Length: 227
Image (tube, rainbow, N blue to C red; front, side):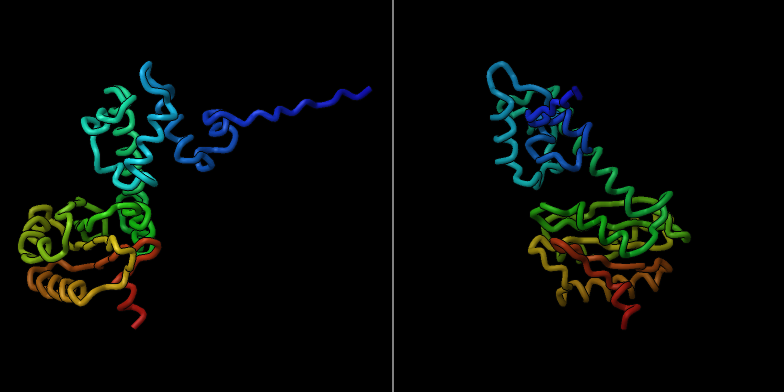
């Protein structure tokens, strides 16, 4: 008689699920379960995970906290806190390297798509500048402000001074709209014009100004080419 194959009906545990299907299929709870491994003596793992997701729904703001803040979560000791902080930074660095190949910005499209993922869940406005050489290779990325565009761009000399120190030939402005709408405001347009004019005077080109929304982005360079 042919032997019947017995198929287990037990659901796969998170690590088994990851090995069988890859990390992309894991829920947020399962991903944290893999990272944390086990609960503490005082707090079950399920409670710790529920507490983390309540504090950081969809992991929003998780990359903004350090190990010293994570240890305040019941069930998270120093070892788990440093592991979570390191995992968050690892993910941030992987994303950061996706928008250029061998250090080179390849297109506004690639940069914009990567920044959508990077800013997802960030609840405040963040302004970045990317300093580039003549071949569009990234020399340095600087976060210049959080919480508002006006304060960050009130004086372009501060940013162009950093560009001159880094010997950059070009720069790209990137900022997010926490509202989720990527369309530029009048202030965004004024900032772009101001930086274009100031850069032309000192020989540092504003290559692009990218505004990141919830699911899309606006590139002044792309829009200019379409016009």
